[in-house]
Every structure is written in C-alpha cells, then in structure tokens.
Length: 275
Ligand SMILES: NC(=O)c1ccc[n+]([C@@H]2O[C@H](COP(=O)([O-])OP(=O)(O)OC[C@H]3O[C@@H](n4cnc5c(N)ncnc54)[C@H](OP(=O)(O)O)[C@@H]3O)[C@@H](O)[C@H]2O)c1
Image (cartoon, rainbow, N blue to C red; front, side, top):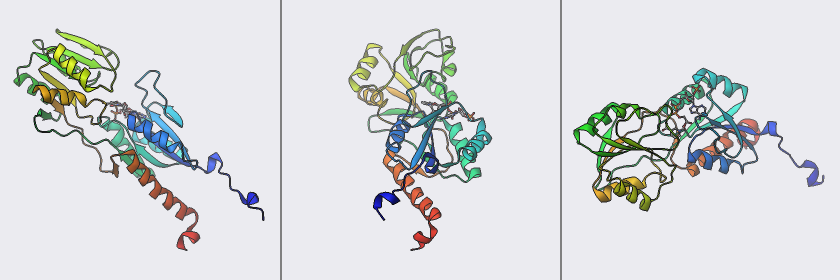
C-alpha cells in the first residue's frame, strides 16, 4: 500500500479539548505554546473584566461559568480533557471553583502559577493577610505619602485614611472611584522598568508602598527601588488555594500535558500500550 493511502488526518472532533482559565501573561504564553500542538483544541476563558481584551491564541470564551456547577456542565458539554488554571494568584474563587468542578467531572487540573516574591536583605516588608490588617499596619508606620498599587477593586479600605496622601496606580479607572481626601490617580499598565520606578518614587516622595504579592517580573521593579531607598512595603500575601498539581513555569505545564497525552494514548490503544 502506498504510504499516502494510510495518512491519518486529525479532524477537529478528534482533537483533545483543553480549557485554559486565563487573565494572566502566563495564560497567553501557554495558549501560544499549545497552538503549535495540532492534536489539541484549546479554549481560553476570560472573566470579562477588561473591555476589548487582547485575545490569546486559540478560541476564546468570555464571562463566568455560573459557579462550580456551571463549570461542571461546561466541562461535560465541551468534552474538556484537561484544565489549566492560570488565573491570577489573587483570583482565588476561580481556583476553588475549578478544583471542585474538575474533581466532580474527573477532569485533570493543573495550576500554573508564577512564584511569589520573597523578601531579600535590605527589604522593609510587612506581610499581611488582608486589607484590614494592611490598613492597621500602614497607620502604625505613620506614613505621609503612599504608593497604592493594589488594583482598582481593592481601594475602598484605604479611602477613609484622611491624613495620608495616596498615589493610586491602576491599569484602568476605578469605577466607581472611592472618595479619597488626598490622592492622585495614575493610570498606567506594566511592565514597569527600574529607572521609571525609581523616578516615580523620588518625584512623589513616596515613603510607603502597599501592594499585593503578585510575583513575576512585570511589576517587581518597584520592590528593588523601594529596597534601594529603605522604603517600607506592606505586602498582601496570596490567598489560600486548593491543593492541586502545580507548575511554576509554562515549560512545567507542557511537561504535565505530555504525561496526560501518554495516558490518553494508552486509554485509546490499550493493546499497543501493553506491548
Ligand atoms: N484579582 C487580581 O488581582 C487579578 C489581577 C490580574 C488579572 N486578574 C484576572 O481577572 C479575572 C477576574 O479576577 P477576580 O479576582 O475577579 O477572580 P475571582 O475572584 O477568582 O473570580 C470571580 C468570578 O469571576 C469569574 N471568573 C474568574 N476568572 C475567570 C476566567 N478566567 N474565566 C471565566 N470566568 C472567570 C468566575 O465566575 P463564575 O463563578 O460565574 O464562573 C469567578 O467565580 C481572572 O481571570 C484573573 O486571572 C485578576
């Protein structure tokens, strides 16, 4: 038989379906890497918080699933074979929903999460569990000029502090914007480089930074600039997440997927797998 006659062409329905819960840089990079796998059909899921978001490689769906139950239905309907939770380290609800839904639907789940920042010599960090603790810790230090880099949805707990001047940095305008007696809003999207972070802290005479431990390189320069200047940092720690298999790099996530693929091949061709 001519080899051409037995050429096997995968149709879209024969591809393994993958769901990426995204909204982070790592999710874009993972989607790009998976686009090269012609045995996969990848759907990216975005929460829909950003108007006109940058679309990742592959297909995209936008909006919540309706809690874990909605996600279970989606996994069944779409015949999803594996889920990557690549949501932001502070987007914990989605992580718990994914954990519950994948467990119930027996779909393998991998959490891909960039490592958290850790303090280095010279850092003056206070690590806090929540915003109430952050506010109390902030007041105790007697700050005057604070860079508030906590995200536009986390501003309310700080709005009542009427004797502190805040430089509020956000990607998009807070809506609604809480009333701060003394504040300036700076709309700006990372990545932020070290020289500009140094200038920002100096020009605004910042004495304290409040931020959350997002990890990654895009927003870490402020911590180096703070260390150089002995500026205090109030760092909100990450929320607790379910215990799932974890990769800290896209490469690790791809290795995990290769193991799943081997398992799927064994399921499809048990005789060959048995040798
Ligand atoms: N929180 C942050 O600091 C931060 C920073 C940068 C980017 N983001 C991204 O922004 C999105 C929303 O963040 P959040 O803090 O509001 O999350 P969250 O508290 O974990 O999620 C709240 C709800 O939003 C929906 N949702 C979240 N991520 C989704 C996704 N990827 N696809 C579909 N639905 C999703 C889910 O709704 P249902 O229950 O209806 O399914 C979830 O229950 C996340 O995708 C996250 O990766 C968050």
